[in-house]
Image (cartoon, rainbow, N blue to C red; front, side, top):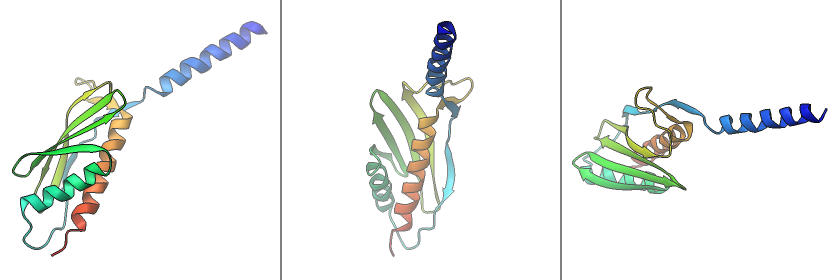
Amino acid sequence: MKSLLKVSLMLAIVAAVFAGCRSGTVYNVNNSPVEIGGSYTDDNIYKAIKKAGVGLGWIISKTGKGEAKGVLNVRSHQAVVKITYNKKDFSIHYVSSKNLNYNAEKNTIHSNYNGWIQNLERAISVQLSMLEN
């Protein structure tokens, strides 16, 4: 009976370890449509993107016209993305990461990364939709 309990406990521990190691295909945002009217500048759009990111803990910095870099540090993990944008759409693409089990051959990463990108995508869409004429 004791050996059955030990085996059950060991299986539960192994299952818990593997449950924490979820991974999925890297989620990139490709040309997410945005309705921005009026004569907004690159700077107005960048500020909306920065506000969205900062609200979620991202460090957003402008890297060029229509382009920004986003960095998220969570405990010992780091995600770095490239954000491109204009009046019609925006995109978010994976650049690099630390401690997120990124596999370039399989294009997989820890599933938390995908959640962070989906949250950033929604927040950017909201902030851009709030730009007024």
